[in-house]
Amino acid sequence: MSEITSGETPKIKLATVWLDGCSGCHMSFLDMDERLLELAEHVELVYSPLVDIK
Image (cartoon, rainbow, N blue to C red; front, side):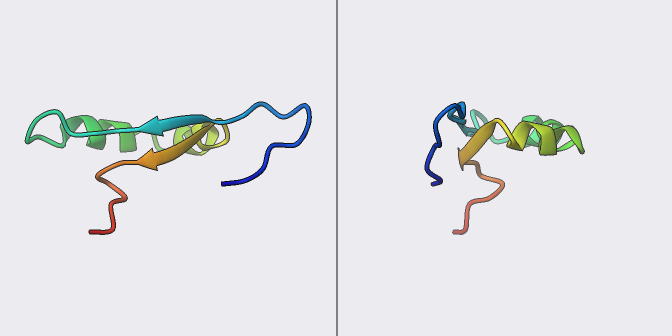
């Protein structure tokens, strides 16, 4: 985690979870392509099955 300097807006913590056996919603999330890079400037992904290291 990075420290917040004065005047900087803290990032929103975001987690995604599977609510069913399907991964369609997560695949749609990945289809955002370059917009994910813009989103990454504003959120901190704290958990997702897509990045789980298990």
